[in-house]
Each structure stands twice: as structure tokens, then as C-alpha cells.
Length: 135
Image 1 (tube, rainbow, N blue to C red):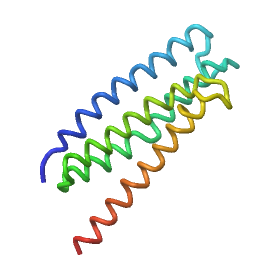
Image 2 (spheres, rainbow, N blue to C red; image 1 turned 90 degrees about the horizontal axis):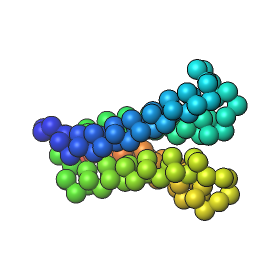
Image 3 (cartoon, rainbow, N blue to C red; image 1 turned 90 degrees about the vertical axis):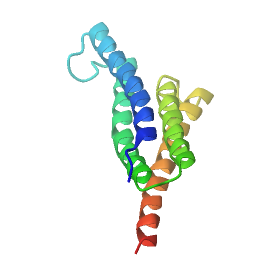
């Protein structure tokens, strides 16, 4: 078993993105004088959801990839999984600021979450498959 060094680099990059999302929420809260909730502001609501959606998916996917890396999954696969997570998490907030039914919305929000869900499923199934193969 080795430390998940590839996963940790991607996680650091994702943490920078998370910081940007958090700062955006704070900036909009200050602008709209909304200490709690969204104060009826659509841009603030979108920023809150982009921030929350990130934290709802990134930790569990990153944890699963780190476990796969520690169990000896080939580096190319770790890069593929974490690179895909990074792309999906970059796409999603871009779509959150677009009007529904636009190309930017479909590619960003819908595409980002679909990629994320497929990645979540792929990581879970890979862990289960590798566990079953070891018995």
C-alpha cells in the first residue's frame, strides 16, 4: 500500500476551486446583505448551490479514488478518475450561472452533474469489483 500522492495533488487543486466558490458566496452575501439564506437573490442562490453541490460530491469521490490508488490501481486510472472529477466540478458552476435551457446550462450544470454521477457510480463499482476479486 502506498500513499495516494496523485489523488492528493488533484484534491489540492479542487480545494482551490472550492475556495473560489466559497469566496463567491461570501461576496454575494455581502453585496445582497444576506447573512442567512439567499435573501431572494438568484445569483446568490446559484452560488450557494454551486458551493453546496461541490461539497456534496467531491469528498466521497475523492475518498474512493484515494482508496483505489492505495490499493494499487494504475496511475493512469487514478489520473483519469481525478481529472474527470476536476472537469465535472469546473463545468457545474459555469452552468449554475446560465439561464435554463441554454447550451451553457446543459453543458455546465447538466453535463457536470451527469459526469459526476457516472464517476460516483464507476468508483463505487470498481471498489466492489476489486474487493470481490480479492476473495
